[in-house]
Length: 95
Image (cartoon, rainbow, N blue to C red):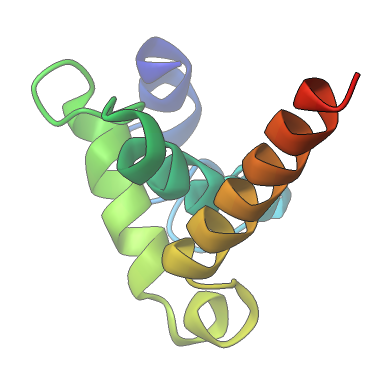
């Protein structure tokens, strides 16, 4: 994905160039899930060492006022995921 970003962005801050486009919005909606995964499982999908361009894009996208206004906080997703995991574990132990 790092190579795809490099090719699509052509050195610009977003996939479509200088401003946020369709692909940025589509992938940007997954950024919170990636951050929640980091907190839950300890891995970094957009690691700065392995994917410096994507990591910078994630930071840029997440810093946008419009993204902050509509995306949920990663901690809320973590809480929800833990609740669902507990429900699944309880259901499995009842079977």
